[in-house]
Image (tube, rainbow, N blue to C red):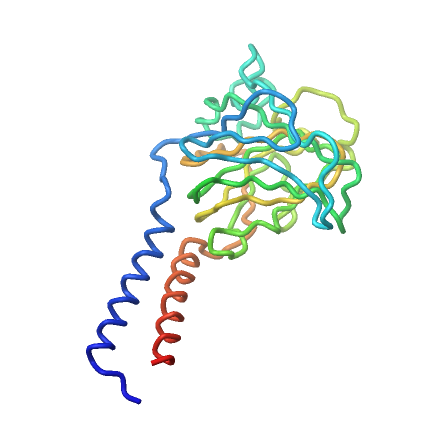
Amino acid sequence: MPIPPSVSRTRSRASRLLLSMAVGCVFSAPVFAQAVWTEVPIGNYVSVTGTLGSVPVTLSSSYPSGSNALGTGFSIQNSTDPGYHIWDNSIPQNSAQLYPASAVNASKDIVMLSQARSTAADPNRVRIRFGAPVLNPTLLFFSIDSSTLDFTPARNAAGVPATLSFTTNTAALVSGKSVTRNPAAVGTAGPEGCQLNSIRACGVVQFTGWYDELLFDAMGDDGVGMQVGTGIVTSLPAAATSVPASSSASVAATMLSVMGLAAWLSRRRSRRG
């Protein structure tokens, strides 16, 4: 049965409205003109809630098998103690100078405590959940001794595998979307930080696109320091090693996903007519 022109025009307007509303929902999230970093209360937690600028942030962990991570998952420490501002490139411990200059304003060191029972088949999955989508989040890390961080589970706000790149002090420890442990670093003592020639991995994970959460799997039993920010402008020294882990365009994928949803709904309504 032919669709009357008036009905067709009404549906067309409805489809455009749906598309504009969907795009608005994705891109009405706050975009920070300057770098902001995660603020969380000092202490030890199974899970903990803080803020990233005006956006609530919750850090938690679990096992894909369904069992909860045992014991303390996160230890929040002050990174502003004299001589020990862990995200400051100017301290001797950070001779690699990999962190964005604005990281000096991050007042907290979030130590992710990996669980000894984590395995490749059932890893400790860390979830950093944002209260609103965040554009181009940045994750800093240091002191990977006996752990591996695998960002393969990460998806952007459209459900597409994350577009990300690593900048590390030791490029050989990056494989795909993972930062692997260096067997020589297990049990190594030394200053906490990000040293250029250290066997302890440190660096930056830069995500591209909109994200409502960051996921990664942690295997190993040592603590790994980290911070999460957004609105970061990076200026990497010549010594830095940047390793792209994906080449897809997450923002474009988000737009295509929203437009595809609107078109699908329009076609569905037409069939019903």
